[in-house]
Image 1: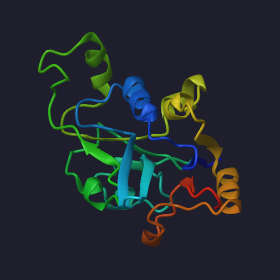
Image 2: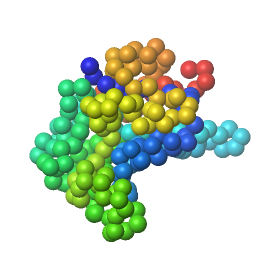
Image 3: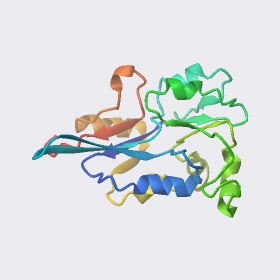
Length: 201
């Protein structure tokens, strides 16, 4: 099975619960956000529109990061999830440059949120994110391969805006409701689909 995610923009309120839950679950260092929410406002009062778009790695079928990684550190699993082998990654940032979704982050140094002296939590979590390597969303592969718990962002969403599961089911549900992929024109065929925020869409 290939995994995918569906995000309903009509339900998303931009509360950042997904981002916070991801931070808590993976203990990512300063500057590294596997999940985040982009907000923008367009128009002039009273015709103003707020756009809220949760962002994460799109787990592309045709992944530029995998195709362009010089060491093979960016790997696409059989289930469609793209991961980074931190032992092979040399931190060249090629994958960051070619990602159309700005979904990758470089671990610059070993400092934590309170400086060089790490907390007990940071000491444990940063082992999987060594300095000089790239980090990204993995659809919580540790849960898929281990506990079977729902993805951190999915479980935390108070509006139930996210659905994770079989990509074929996700795509079918999205296409039936005028769903779309971000930056579809770059032809990476993302595994993350969105339902439009327009009420009558």
